[in-house]
Amino acid sequence: MSILWQGARGLIVKELQAKLKEFGFDPGPADGIFGPATTAAVTAFQKYQKLFADGIAGPQTFSTLELSTASVEAPTPARTKVFVSYSHADEKWLRMFQVHIAPLERSGVVDRWDDTKILPGKKWREEIAQAIQSAKVAILLISAYFMASEFIAENELPPLLEAAEHDGAVILPVIISPCVMGNLATFQAVNSPSKPLVDLSRGDRDRVWVKLVEAITAALNE
Image 1 (cartoon, rainbow, N blue to C red):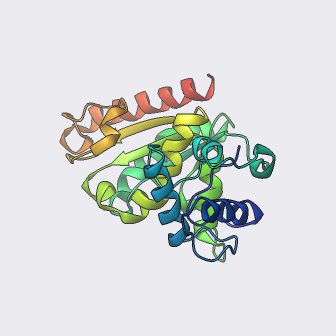
Image 2 (cartoon, one colour):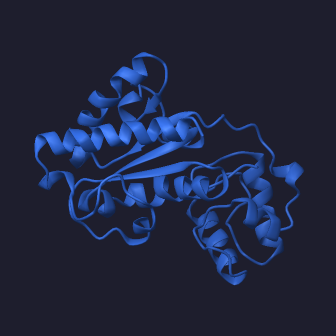
């Protein structure tokens, strides 16, 4: 079953837009582009139907819209990647994770993806969306910068949380610095929020990274 969110395009989106109109929710032109108007229409429909209102069209939304599964079936990548969501203000912490995961990448055990993998000339939004669709494990490097990022909140977290809810993706938060975590506090973090990485010694930070790598390996082998 496809999961559609803002930025998606194609016939599936066009059919979704048509169904929303049938139910009295205006997604804007039925042009096959999942833009802000379609997101608002999906959110309004979800609220009306008392579904989780995140603006993402997943299995429950498709079913409630009476949209045939045949219409929304689409090949999706196998979930094999380790996706890293982080704020660029926390890039030094990403580099430390890259160091610790490097041996498993080299041996082919882990296929890590973060936005440093995007090559010049590529459409970066599409690259991120594709990587999220193939993510088995999502690493969240959580800080005040992370929680303040509108791009993360609107484009990365919703599909990752949807994948965790319906497709078996595993969310592994790492607490970089003290911050208000909101609904992410429901996920068991690799390190305690009372012991963020910024407050730890080098040795203790390394032990957190090792624990994270072990958790990734376990999740990939489930």
